[in-house]
Length: 74
Image 1 (cartoon, one colour):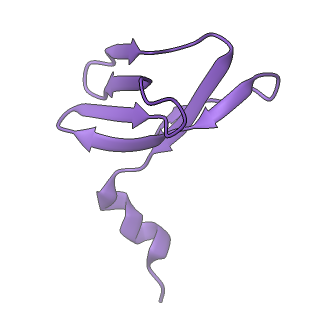
Image 2 (image 1 turned 30 degrees about the vertical axis):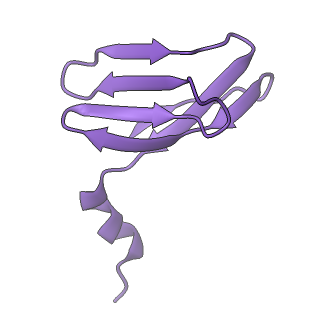
C-alpha cells in the first residue's frame, strides 16, 4: 500500500514528510509548521490543518514493512 499526495507543476509545492500513527498516515510540511494532513488508511477519512490554496503540499508514505523490498539485494 502506498499513499500519495499528488503535485501539480503549475503551483508552488512543498514536499511533506510522513509518519504513521495507528490507522492514520500524517503528513507534515517542514516549510509550513502549521500544515498537517491526516489520512486514515482504513476509512479513507481525511483531515487538513493549516492549508493555504496557493501552496500545494505533496508527499508519499511507504510503510516500513515494505522498505526492505527496496533495499534488499541478492
